[in-house]
Amino acid sequence: MHDVKSISEKLEAAGVNPTAHRIAIYQYVMSEADHPTADEVKRWTDENFPKLSLATVYNTLKTLVGAKLLKELKLPHIGKVLYDCNVSDHHHFLDEDTGQLIDIDPELVEVRPKLKKGFVVNAVHVLLRGKGPTRKK
Ligand SMILES: [Zn+2]
Image (cartoon, rainbow, N blue to C red; front, side, top):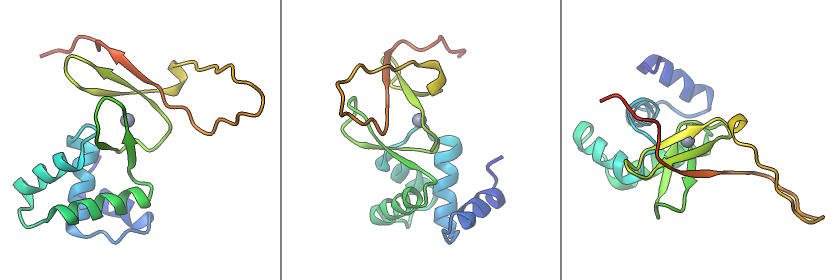
């Protein structure tokens, strides 16, 4: 699914020049990582692309966000920006035991705000917290 060729085509289609590190970072966030922070991406590039600076990692993430290939998430449980490869609208479930953030289809969460007249809601993001389904080990 997320091979180098299809990743580089996605980047090109979004108007991003598919350099080796952009392909690698996007591929990492798409397949291996789970809503990583920039620090996590940097730790991964340190192992795989040891010459990439933190500034380059940040710039690459910024480019991918600017091209709408990634979304920036700011959630209250962690004081850092997370990068989400799922750019469609969705909610999140935080497994408080593992810290894992699970994407939740907006169809599964009903939000019916009872706001006074005059409010215009542009976006809804729900962070559910608790215990996720038991995972196979
Ligand atoms: Zn997500």
